Image (cartoon, rainbow, N blue to C red; front, side, top):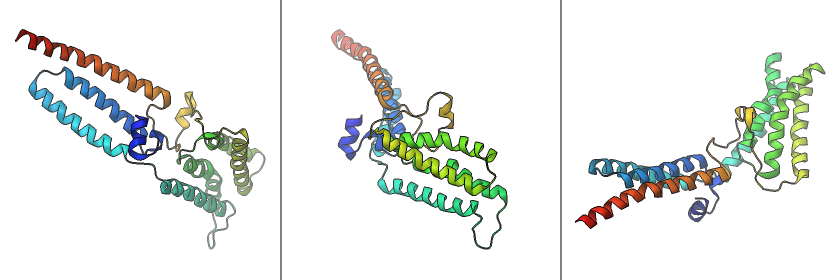
Length: 235
């Protein structure tokens, strides 16, 4: 499937806007084709053919919907804007407004709630993905722990900024390149919001799933073909 997407758009499957939707539609197409091959009733075949046509139309559209660079840049702008606004909040520097402590606290929590998720929504790979994964896990721990050392919101905000920059420096030094870096697994996957990665089957597991579906489709079609050949021989 990845080769087909590359031929259509020039990008990999992972660079589509909704890669998991493409995978699910492809799986649905294979299963529907198998049902169509096994169906004998004319009305049922017509219904399945109509369903298959709709799936193929949606699949063709999704395969051409690329996750464009301007959208990734929009997420970067969103994260920078969140840093700027949260900085004004923690320093109580918004002109003409006296912020409550709870709003200033929201300022330093913005790293975990807005800044890092916006950067992860770009679906970075390699060293940057590892860096943002570490920052995503480290930011809430740091934010919860810092009040035991200081009650000043601006210092907690600065500590989160230092953490984010430090994670980027570590990821760059670790040198994962643009290779695949595993996402969160186990209980941590329930915290994995804002990563920009749909919850579909990914990587090698996706290819194995599609391969199994294709085999199942061929096996389901073989009995139908055998029945057709037998009927032709009887005639």
